[in-house]
Length: 212
Image (cartoon, rainbow, N blue to C red; front, side, top):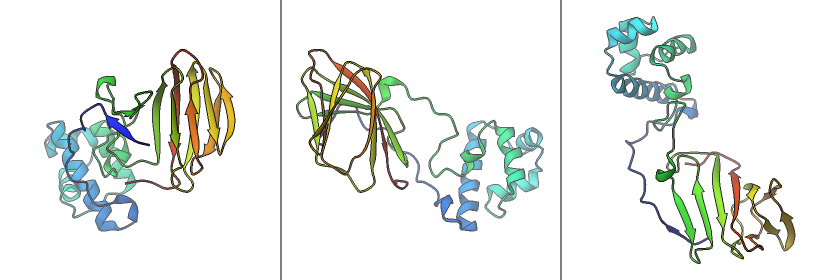
């Protein structure tokens, strides 16, 4: 697919910590340490204030934040409660605290060269992910053609407005409002709007393994 970017790239994030998912204690410890420091600083909390809020001693918090100690799940849960974040926020390689608002005007929008096909990312476009969620708009009689993506990639589309004709390896399926289709997207496929009014759909792309 050939796209034109219509929204500026999002601002760069700080360099990510080591991958917390590789099972290495040092990597996990560093990841937790960096995220704890980031989350605490963001809330303007001293170690003493966080110790009071979480019930974890100041000495233990200092050891964790310096990377000298990897906390147990029980301790991490206490700290997460004190900071009012998900435990997963400490294991993210990129700054994500469990909830992220994505204002419509900041969404990444991609437009086909013909201008007939527009997709809007409904997820943090700059972050590692295993699935992608898009709003798709097709102008009247517009279409988007793909020769296929990588092995194992699936596309799941549901029509929210109008009609969309989906072709997979030249087999055609006509979807009306509320209809959905799931298929392996490593095959040639096409989305086409056969009507004289705009079609709107939502598309989930799922990858066989986590992307970076």
